[in-house]
Length: 202
Image 1 (cartoon, rainbow, N blue to C red):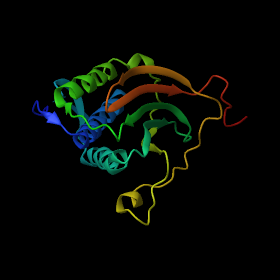
Image 2: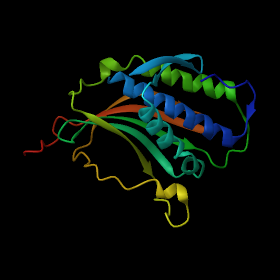
Image 3: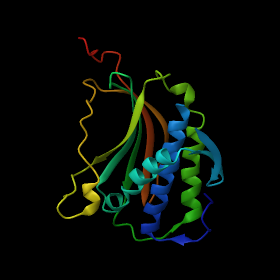
Image 4: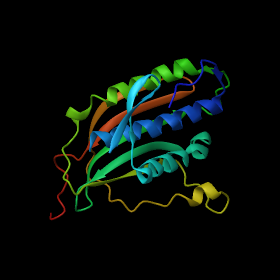
């Protein structure tokens, strides 16, 4: 994907750029764990899935968040890795805030420069991550401030409540990158289970 032209963007385009960034960033996270090809995005080298079904899963899932991010309903987007027993072993979390009342325009180049730094940071985070077993799996999960009404939106029908078991103890958090600007604030951090987290057999 090529970087956008250097022009002034309304707030709606800020959300579009954010969603496009999330798709690329999530692909980069999955690449850290395991068929990908190199591409350039926002003038940074990133990874793109070769398998069409994997591409489609990441693209459709993240694109489906667009209307909810525009309404300010999404608090976090996480890529969660599980072991063969379906127990969470690692989470990459994007915590985001889009200021819905922000009326000034944003330069695309400024936003892309800030988001590109996340992609560069992601490319060197492998030493912070855990080695996962070969039978691991992963999913993309969104955390909403309030659940959207499925009766009033076709987009809401695409999302189902997760049955993923949460950790009982607060996780160990490793910050990766953050930005705090208008209209977008974004944090990326890594979560691992606490050393005191009860094991399934306990």
